[in-house]
Image: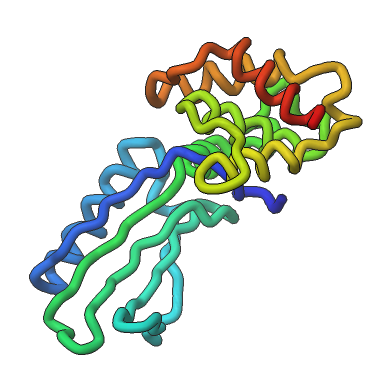
Length: 200
C-alpha cells in the first residue's frame, strides 16, 4: 500500500448543501483556521487542483487538494447538480491518520503501526487493523454481505507473517479504534475470530 492510504481510517469530513460560492469560501477559510489551530503553519500549506470540472452521472464538481509540505492530506470538493446548477454542495474531507501524518512528518507505517511497523507486510498489518474494526463492531465473516467483506479482509493476511498469532497487534489496534468509539467485542475474541478464519 502507498503511504497515506489505508483500508480503514477515521474520516474527518463536512458535507453540506450551500447557497453560494461565498459560503464555499467561508467553509474553506474555516478549515484553514482549524488547520492553523492544529499546528499547520500557513506557509507550509498549499491548495492545488484543476479548475476544470469533472462529471459523474448527474453531478459535476471541482476538487482542490490540501498539502502540508510534501504530503497531500485532504480535499475540498465543490459539487453541483448538472441539470440544476443552483443546487450546490461542499464536501470537505481528510482522514485523522493523514492529518497526523502531515502534521508530524513521521514515517507512515511507523505512525500507523507503531512498534509493529516492519513486523509483517503492510497489507497484512492493514488487514488486521481493518478486521479488528469490523469484528469489533460485530461484522463476522460470512459468504455474502458485510460479512463477506470481513472474510476478504482476513483473507489478505499473510499466513506466514501471522504464524505466531495476531493477538498483540489486534490488542494494539483495538486500543486505537476504542479511542474513536466503543467496540462490542473484546479484543481476545477478535483475535480468536481472525485466527479461526485464517485456518479455514
